Image (cartoon, rainbow, N blue to C red; front, top):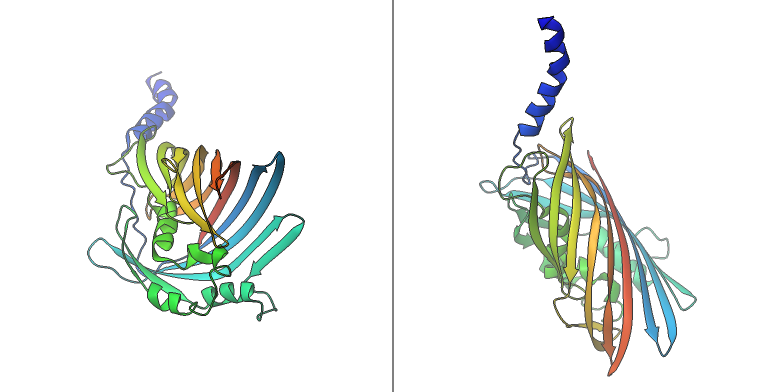
Length: 293
């Protein structure tokens, strides 16, 4: 009888032990580790001008290679390379494509992505996902000195130092400050700097751990925190947005590397262009999948 009771309560005991286990989550891949992160971003923008709606659609596929080389103390040095970049935009019946693998290498739009694919930058990353230092950005910027502002409009996120930093931290600055158990939640704050400053107050919850993979839910309040200036096609404008992110992540509990994520973002607000107020809504879907090579 005692053995039967023990067998009956053993699974419950294991669940209680697993739920009580604490985990230290941080950016902690091993030296010489390599990861391929594929991202798919779908954006839909709807603007209302003079009683008419204008819709813009953008689809981007970005394939990044991260190589952990060495570091200083707990910090990790990461070489970042673009394996592939492709963006398609549809608006007013026109389609514009930028493709690092396009055979039309003379097209300035493709050439920008081709140069990016041939380039490399290095980031020194703290365990909490902060970037301490970026190397190679100035050399990268020099490669685009002969491009016009209009030509670079869709590629600034990959060229400007602050934009590169904030883009990287969107993927890696989510770690909790202390150890967490299944069911625990924590918050972080991240900021995107381009094409306008957008602040996210993020809430993460560790739902379960299975075979060293953590399953997280993500919810965020997103805002420009008032009107922010931006420039598009030589025109200066102001934009004011608020919204939410919602989705899920899977992460490797040992290395802290994301395995996959699926985040939906919905924003709404207004733009002011040449004294005219334009209502705007933006919906984004961001999916990533990371493979250790």
